[in-house]
Image (cartoon, rainbow, N blue to C red):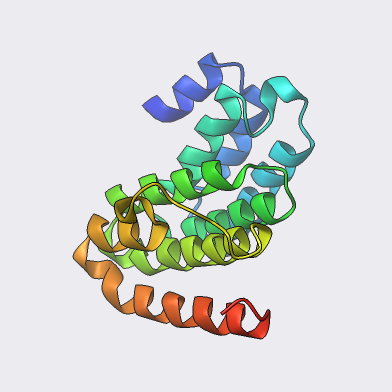
Length: 173
């Protein structure tokens, strides 16, 4: 039995990801982590037609981020943040992927996505030398997180504190 999402991945020319993505469903956290690390490693080194910006790459990232497994989501958030911090994936795309996954995730996974978003926001602010501007308050990533779901509040407060401390240390606040 192959799930619909795995079938779609196969149809889109992603056979090379399918085996690894199927391993994320094995109920052993160490195998799940290794599978996610392997998927993102393949995304990092794949030719453009299968890389992180391709349809196949986007499907693979989405598949990992929407998993019901805490282990898979935790490792996927970490790997996505690495892609952004290593400039393999655009910051805005990383924020969008995590925000989208946050909005539809199980409540037990909320803090993982908020932590990842907080990390990307700190990177973005640092990359823009503190001049990261938004055309409206509603578009600020912290506001978007807060308005997405009630369960974000506790972790979001922690991330805002980290943001302030990080930028103070850099002399930006």
